[in-house]
Length: 132
Image 1 (cartoon, rainbow, N blue to C red):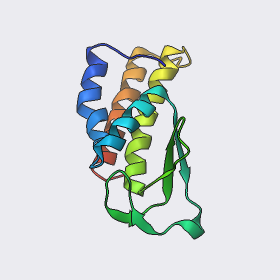
Image 2: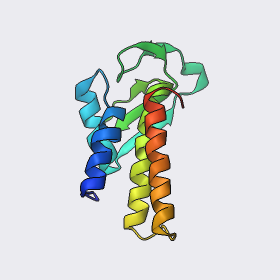
Image 3: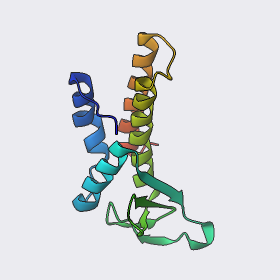
């Protein structure tokens, strides 16, 4: 597990990551945040013939749930809506890019790295608002 610290990351976590993963089911949302941080979350599409309106385990509202999530060490899958999935994916994309930077896989200028981080923050904001 890579630990991210520093003022910039703490601000992103407070302004973007936590609000993006803030769901009505707080117990599951806390588990989700930790799983995303550790890079141990599984997200899979639900096959079309099994996709129908049901209760999204995160938002606790009845919606068409086309995706499911599973936590490492759990055998249980949780159905989630498209909007919940988009919010999770936006945060996962941000963490993935940070991991690439730490691993030395990103070979571009600091300005370009910062621009990509801003784009990913924007993606989290848009998914939180349901625009993506």
